[in-house]
Image (cartoon, rainbow, N blue to C red; front, side):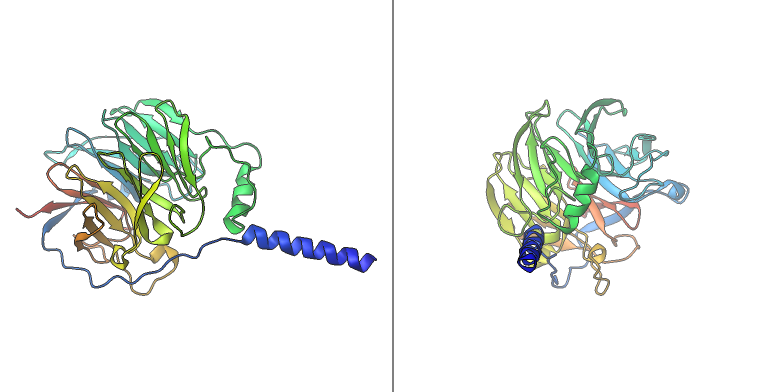
Length: 355
């Protein structure tokens, strides 16, 4: 009788373990075909210069204001998932015409800033993956609003377990972020968050921060995510998501319904994505370096149309001008100039189209 009970207990434990570990997708690896030489664009390192390099940290975000000014987000002395408040400035604002530094701000505000967005009113939005918050600022760095609830006791521990066992219950509520990576703001003031490193969801909130819908499932089928990392939206309100560990781009309508998926091997591993004023889709592929594949290292910039067809792609691994080491985010201005924030090279590059 005792042996039978132990057998039941053992089978129950095994069954629970299988359930908790079920459904964890593998990271997708691809080998893109040969990347084109840089022929259509003229590259330039905009920031930092030699004098400023001591201030430069991991390049994380990039956006362009309606006036053409360039906002660059970096982590200064901080790091990914850092626990300490960064004492130095983390936002560099460059004049869109002269490309010289107009001002810097952001000191004492963040622990690990990650995503950067400028909305249609030129408000600045920043995600922080250590603070699990989204911050909204005006252009001079005055904090206007904060989104996201503080973690209750025990949630951090439960989330760490779920990193290993994907079905482990965390009891996290819909208004709490778990390392939000990026966001896109729509014309009506609503915003969609890529809540990527732990929640594996995109979630739309109204301008007051009330949840309207979410797509929240770990996996590699249509409408599922394995690290939604970058996010953008087009003029119709469609949502474009860089589904990083699935090595693909997913498109949703403004209600969260999946429309399409682009998984061509030449897209590589998309980190950042931006819909330009020309409605073309600009993407940076960070390659497999952070996923443990240190063999053939690649990083590239891609330009696609709305059918997912690749119009241009260029880039090579390295630290020379025009080369890239884990491009983390991308932006484009109304003249077609591309701006790229690099993680490992800790810099901002521009790519001006040859006329």
